[in-house]
Amino acid sequence: MSRPSIPSVQDLLTRPDGAAWSGIRDVLASLWGSPYPDGSPLSEIKKREDTLAPWDLLLSHTAWELWRSFGTSIGTTAEALISFWADHSNGKAILVLDCLSLREWPILLQEACRRGLIEGSVLPPKATQLPPETNTFARAMGFTSRGALDNNGAKSLQFPGAWTASNNLPWVDAAKHIAPHPSIIYWHHWPDDLIHQYDGSDGGIDRLIPILTKEIRSDDFWQFIKALAQGRHLIITSDHGYANSGAFYNADADQKEDLKSVFSAQRYRNGELSTKDWLPPLAITLNEGGNPFTAVLGRRKWQVPGGFPTLSHGGLTLMETFVPWVEIPPVNIGKTSQA
Image 1 (cartoon, helix red, strand yellow):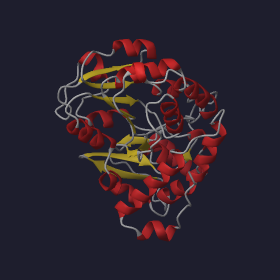
Image 2 (image 1 turned 180 degrees about the vertical axis):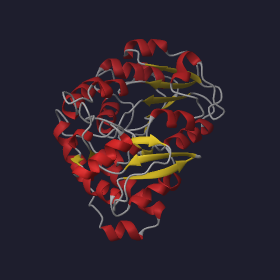
Image 3 (image 1 turned 90 degrees about the vertical axis):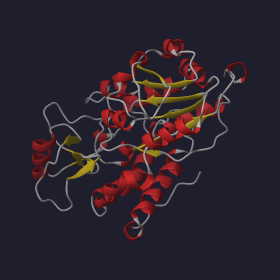
Image 4 (image 1 turned 90 degrees about the horizontal axis):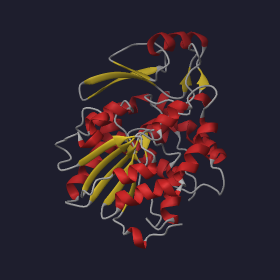
């Protein structure tokens, strides 16, 4: 799949908001939906993130106002899942892999193809709820929190009849945990727990990606996926992505103090907050469903005690705000490849 060209500032700004966001989504699909070369994908991931840098720069400088129309322009993951649930009367499952990003998407697609579960078609990524964090997504799904799904404890008007689970079980145990139920929502805490484990200065993307790659390619992981897809149409997606914030540029000295005072080591804060009158601004306040929040724009980091996290989410970059979407039709485990 050929790499997309980066549009000019004029091209982006002269499009209607919906067309601008659709174009960005198409670029993401082309860039991240194509396979990685054989072997470790780390260097390729870094190259692709570099390709996206001009987009994040435009969306944090010239075109930051586009974020005000993000959720309404192209629809969100939660909306797509609600539609999927309504369109399938029986035999359906949703797997939310917490904090799975577009970086892991090509590996997931390659393995699903290799194991005979899909035939290689790439569906566009989905837009997260804003701010891109767990509780926002849970509420958009009609749940009080991620934890509410544990032990079939959650009920949502948007997902009638769903058997629910939320945990961080090893894949083999998670497969055994699945109930013999036709309609399932399983929110697994991987890779979120692992990402937070490696978000310090001694971790980061270089240590994380080999671990995620090995796990996605494991037979145990696909035993779990096949158990969910047994007799069910399965959607695999995520609540939000994550930023490789260890590679972000350092804000100017006076901006660092401003960002530190408002956000500490976070990428967003609830409520309407303000930084100094920088132009372009360092952050923007958005109002999603009557819940205002203020999020950092673009690839910025700043000094905080202990060092700014090398992996994070909650801010406004493309890798935080778009997530994979994979559809696997119902399968018969006995007829799928065991490779």
